[in-house]
Length: 225
Image (cartoon, rainbow, N blue to C red; front, side):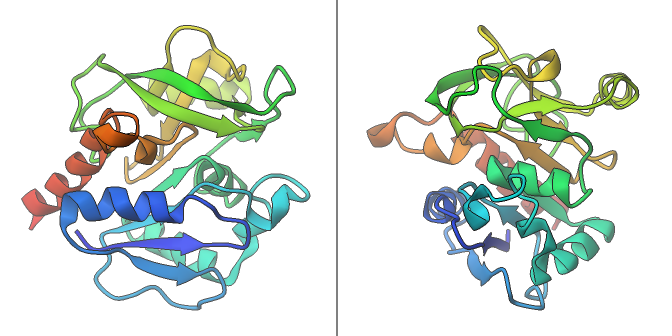
């Protein structure tokens, strides 16, 4: 699997994401600056990592969504490329129109930094194939604007077409509608999620609950090859 991670001013999770990807592929992902104008040839996966791009001015992810390289990411997605956005990356995907809805202030109006558990709503995607249907796993949330919201029509479509990939279990701390933690594009190639699976890939730093996501991604491209 050939992957690239896009770095924006204020990104702070690119190294964690690189460690997770390298662990399952044995190769370092390309690190791209947001002002680059082209993606490397032969990419399988583009990752938009977490952080506070542009200091979260205006709306979280709004300025990053206008960065030069995001036009290439949109084209990559349109051609069927896989794009994963985590936390701030999820916000960017929504702001760029690659996923519907928006991430609002947490219901508590407080920054949340804690573990959470999620349930896998479908296990037939590249991102979730490493888990079982209905399986719960732990990850870390670290966000102030993780309250997923969309209008009733969009929500009905997401639920009806099974485009909700992950759902919070237990207390819905950020207030996301229908406890949504992650969603997919209609072709299942683009996924956005708020918690950080890349923080859970090593038993020495919190466990390996997130590792199946990355291993599943790597296996899906190996199978395709």
